[in-house]
Length: 144
Ligand SMILES: [Fe+2]
Figure 1 (tube, rainbow, N blue to C red):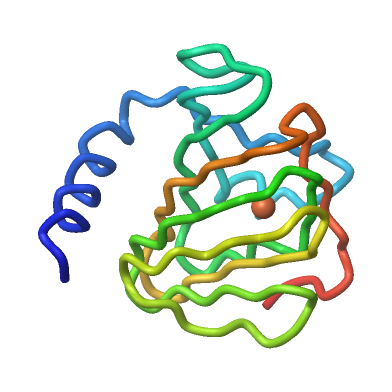
Figure 2 (figure 1 turned 120 degrees about the vertical axis):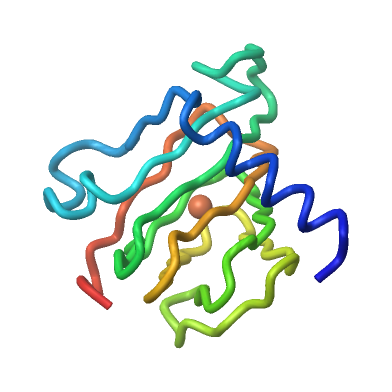
């Protein structure tokens, strides 16, 4: 693993307890299990530490064995995967394993989903484009 990725994991781990986590999403879009096990923080952007209305970035944190169901948004999204064994999918295809340090790009309004069986899924993210429109769940496949 690249030293810079090790430093990123250590930094994320250290700041996690101090972040203003939110679940986003409307309560009608997912079940209680999801809301108890999914969270993200916005560092730059609407509601973040630094306000910005044309891009945003933060960290997503998902409990082990929690399927982040298919969802989409107009913003272009880039994730940095920091979790060994995490799986990622787009356009409702199979979820595929990603390596630590792998960059995952989700084009505008393309459905995507994520999952990690054994470890918490930690992934810094970046949104560009129409960041004012929140993500929407598809509720097409249910639990992974
Ligand atoms: Fe997304």
